Length: 340
Ligand SMILES: C[S@@+](CC[C@H](N)C(=O)[O-])C[C@H]1O[C@@H](n2cnc3c(N)ncnc32)[C@H](O)[C@@H]1O
Image 1 (cartoon, rainbow, N blue to C red):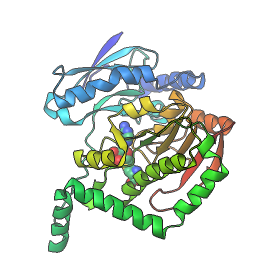
Image 2 (image 1 turned 30 degrees about the vertical axis):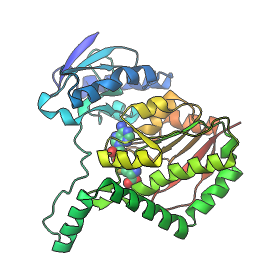
Image 3 (image 1 turned 180 degrees about the horizontal axis):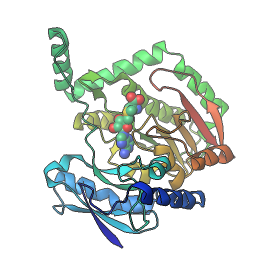
Image 4 (image 1 turned 90 degrees about the horizontal axis):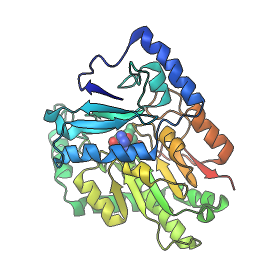
């Protein structure tokens, strides 16, 4: 069944007491094990916003695939092609009505992944008003920085961090102790490491989160215990600029359009995720069982990447938790290694 929903949210979304009744249906379906996310649905949805954004598809109707295969057409706003994206809802957002779509349709079908015009990923200056002349000039320099300049900034920040912070030394000790090199890893997939320039400033956190991906790859290569010659590294964040993509590509990190990172992640991945604006934990828990996971410590709802009963169950039953040393660049982060 296909229901039409316009970008203005037409009458096919229920609200109020009707919606409340459906929230318990969604919770019951979830508790019974119904996956909110599947690779098939994300694959079917994936190419559409990209084609629509870059103009290779002119249709304004994008088709979302719901949790048990039902479909919904989203009428995109042709005047705002740039911002059309997949929107993801956590189980908490779906069952409280906090989500963009309230998760609930009048026909009792629901969508944890749908389409929306999302405008939050700009990374541009909000205001220059209160800045002194030197700061404005410095921000202009950073904004206009060529790819080679950003590459140099990336290497400078990474080298400084490796020399001065005990974090990497401790990380390697922890990876050794937990046999990460023999965990059957084939690839590294990272989410939400952020653009390398944010708000016209070098985003040191983001640089170091990407540096961790490369450190992991180098560690695995150095240990040489794998059946693969190289460890492809992938990173998904819709906020990357073309300049970010060029720098990361030259360092050996392939940037992927959403949702291709979710499609790449599998049981042989190391998955990293640093405080995403989408429920990465819940998506991953439905899609695969990565060999190793590094992501933020458990977070209660409301937040954009909450844990859930399903995430908790996966981590508790199937993984060993390893606390990681604190470093500002990663916020509180924890590692999970699949039990052998
Ligand atoms: C709170 S910021 C965190 C950025 C960075 N990790 C940090 O620690 O500063 C959330 C990030 O999630 C990213 N994000 C939003 N939607 C995403 C998606 N579908 N896949 C991956 N990243 C996404 C945003 O672009 C943004 O960079």
